[in-house]
Length: 372
Picture 1 (tube, rainbow, N blue to C red):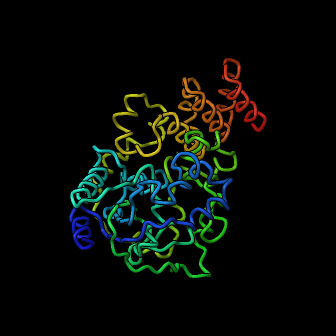
Picture 2: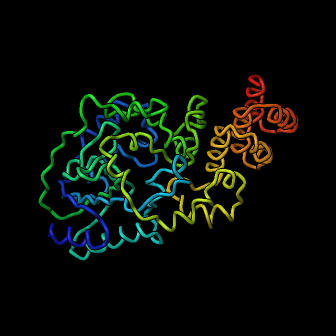
Picture 3: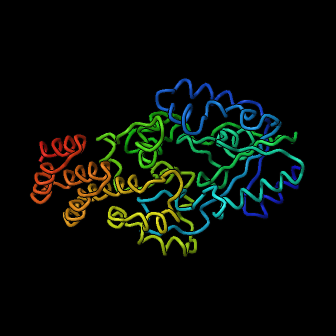
C-alpha cells in the first residue's frame, strides 16, 4: 500500500512521500505553550494548532499520517517580483478546488479513499513536524523544513488516514552547522532570535498577511517593523535565500514561468494601491489568494512598500489613497508619506488632517507631522 501511495503521488506531481504514526506531536504542544504570547493566534485561533497537534482531533480514526512534499522551485521566478512576493506565494500552493495544487490534493484524497481509508487534513495538520517525523525533511535554524538535496523551497501536505501504514525511517537531527546562523543574521526584524526559534509577530511575512487580518493577531504593524519590510507586499524570503543549503537552488538556470512573467507587472505596488474591487478579485487574487481575502491589506502593504521606496514621484498616488474609503489604507498611506518626507508630503498631510474623520488616521497623520 505504501508503494502504491508513493507511486500515485509522484505521478500527479508530488516529489516525495513519507509515512509516520498518528501519535500526538507532543514537542509542538510544548513549544506552543512555551511561546504562547507569540503563537496564540495560530495555537488557539485560526488554525487551532494546539488542538490538531493530535492528528486524532482531525480524524478520530487516524492511525497514520501521510506526508507529501512538493518542490516549488522548478521554474525561474521573475526578477520584478523579487523582494515583493515570497516564492511560496508566487507558486500558488492553494487548496481551492479550481486551483492546480488544490486539484492535486483532491486527487490524492480520492485515491486514498478509493483504497478504503478515511482521510482528514482540515482545519490544519502539523505539517512541518509531520515531515520531520516521516523522514522527508529536517528542521533548519530558520524553522523551515529542509529536504536533503532539495533545500527548503518545498510545500508540505500532511493527511491523517485510518489505515495502519509502515512508518518511514526518520533522522530528526538538523543538518545546519552549529556555527552558521546566516538566516538569523539575514532577518531584518530579529524575528529569528536564536536557532530554531522565531517570534512570528516580528516576522515580515506574518505582518504582510496576519496583522490586522487574523483573529487574535495584533491590529497594527509596529512602526519598527514597517521600515524593515522594505518592498515586501506578500511574504518574505530573507531567511531562506540566505541559507547556504539553498544556494545551489538559487543558482539554477531554469526556464521562466510564463504565467508569473505575465502577472509580474500587474503586481506593481503602485497598481495595487489604486486597484478597485474588480481588479482585486479578477486579477490579483488569481495569484495572491492565500491568506488575504480583502484588498485593503494588500493596499496597506503596497503603501508601506511605496513609502520605503523613498520615491517622491509616488506622493501623488499616496495622496489619492488618502481618500480611500478604508481607514487602514488612509492610515498607512499617511505613514508612507511621512516616510518619504519632503515639502509635498507635508503639504498633503496638513491638508488631509483637516478633513479626516477617523481619529485613528488623524493620530497617524499628527504623529507623522511631528517628525516632518
